[in-house]
Picture 1 (tube, rainbow, N blue to C red):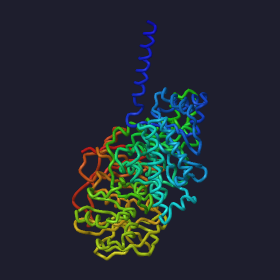
Picture 2 (tube, one colour):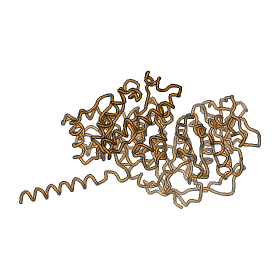
Picture 3 (cartoon, rainbow, N blue to C red):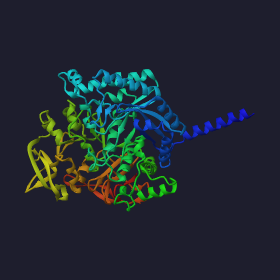
Picture 4 (cartoon, helix red, strand yellow):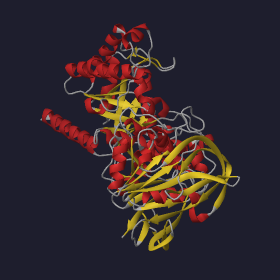
Length: 626
């Protein structure tokens, strides 16, 4: 009888454990922590493992953990790996493996050389070892090729480094990682995590055409850190934009986004990275890494604007920690936990993201990362690897010149009644490829320093500093300036319009310093936003730069400010609406009638305009009422 009751008790405990694992910690996404080989090796010490996990788990909810087998030639031994796997499974977590193919991160991110037979064999062994332990393995950022040893120089021959590395890494993917891993464990899902520097990928062998089609899944580095204090100077909008682009490479195969605490002046910037990734509808949020989650947060991470009721509340985070953490110092884990718990409700309101399509062909370069600057001036961008012929409006940067048929595609689009906006960089690239047969606009070799900007009917506004821009030539009354850069009585196009067939070809002159877009007055930015949004988006922004708009297919949208002070912006509808509802507060916003402006003035049609205040480094979630 005792034996019978023991069996019953065991079954009950097992059922409770399964139920606990089945219950989601969050309603709209999973949360994971990535653990480097250095920390996994330390997990051989049971006291260290217990104490560190107690700190993390007391301050945030975790669904999954990645345990790395290799980094910087450190390979964690099997007994330690098996101990860590068992520990976290008993805690109810999903457990997956990780590999970082670095020889030495400290030595300028030195990776394995896949031309060197010794290093290639070692990399294969690591893939096989890891697949023997896990049914899912993720490759951290470094599955690229940065070596120029004698093996590489000889193997490259007359090809460019880009051509050689793309071919080499296709081979390495199949014959060093995927094939060997699947041979050891046919159930093993091998996922490649791509980093945030996507516009430089081809030169190092990352192939966004091959990889998403051949790996079992991909993952996205959405870390943007702080544009001022970190080395990459990435714009915050990249954290949203890159996830959307990678998901469009092979829809449904982008497993999640991944951030770290690098270059962090204030904890708000860390939180922004998390919620921007989730605004893109990433199904999983991974925190890099276990060690960083243990870092203690003090008052120095409290931003100056934190007493204004912002989306991330440092004080609320502190109160929770004092109440629930039982004397454990507040760490990055609590910042993540607070942010994720807060944003979970927001994600539940949202449909699928939509945006103004911007075509980036595979392996393309040019005007690097420019779409993220567009996002920071309020354009909801959706980068795609195909020409979006179905859309009534698109934005094409210099990257589109990699498509050999791009001019013919632009012409077909225009003759079909669909507008196209090209940048000055693309105009330059296409100048000898027939673009001037569509509209006679010339990219000259002259520069100008604009000290004021004239924006349609809004008149002239002085710039806070001179803006260096390209001079674009055109034929009077064959095409027209919509926004002009001015200096000393002379003016040059910033936004230009030329009629062709049943539609318009727009040219946006991008300043040499992309961040000068942020110095355009609101009057100019408003015209750019209206032009880009009127035919495809339900709403657009009016106001200054550093405010972003995220739009979804269920009539919801988010307005987020990256400014250090509160800002008033207007939301303008492009169609008939009854009102807006703030979904977090339940407040209904009443609009006012705004006449629609054409190139000759008011059109007789009207729009609705709504004014709202957005707190510093905060967001508002709204629904259109029709």
